[in-house]
Length: 409
Image (cartoon, rainbow, N blue to C red; front, side):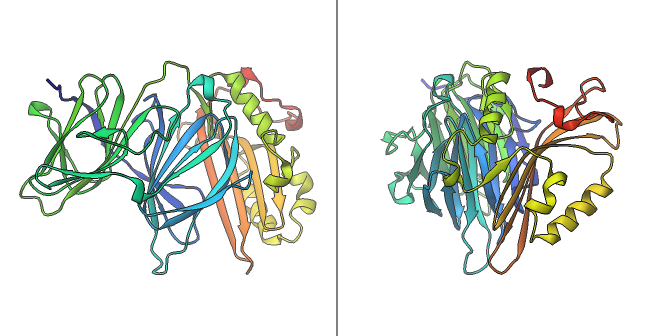
């Protein structure tokens, strides 16, 4: 006898900016849903022409990218490169560390590239495994129909109605399904007992649960289920004007501490600090393969050297930082090539409403096309409140002598 899972919560994923001009609806990894092991983040991304996710690091997690529309090229510091198209998936294991980029193809009709990206935590014993990629093509994904053809299920990973997925592609056990329900259709999908599970709605109005627990939501909602039970029930009203589609995911919770700082997901503050040091010294790979020269020096002290030939950026930075005098900037990493300038830093600022100090991690990336066009990327994460005593960059402090140690976390 099966037991339907109750619904813990359901909420709308709010759209926000990310990467270089991309837009994402983030539902996991927000104030609405954190500490949902093994899941760290879920983004429903839309990448318009000229936008994307230039070079950025990862350590300690796996990312699963499911492309719904368009095509995305990926390349990493070890020379691995490829393309996923609509219906394909990429499973990337960061392990001990990786630097890669995810940039969209330009569609002939100028339309956006759309997809899902899920971050999954790695077991502690695999945090230092070798990085790897596995691409799963749309043609490799088993598809079935149930409820007299009213429900279509793509079995990306796991098992549905007696049909298994092609292979296990992630180190951490996860089941993933792409489910489409026509008006009047319903489905009961079994999931492993004790696993955490959620459904992200892509189209239409869908009703989840049974009895008094029934909840109807529109698109772009995350529906989170209780661990108790072994079946998720979903349906679309017979009078609905369109079919419903959702992304159903379940994963084995990991009994371990999670310490995350931006793209680094480890099990202790010391591990995260080491990841930052390794990233600065490009210890995970050959600097020539990364094709970047890193130096932990001040942006201002070296701007005439590093930014020579890119006067427009010097001018822009000057205007920006003169305007933002309330910021206390901490340089940390600088990278440059003939066609790219990247700055990684921490900064502190006083919130304009609360008057309280906060600290952010930032990454700014400028890339140049052959025709000289410029693209800016800014990513900020882990915006944390701090007290006056916890400030690093007080007036009169030599920021070059500020060291990031355990006491700062």
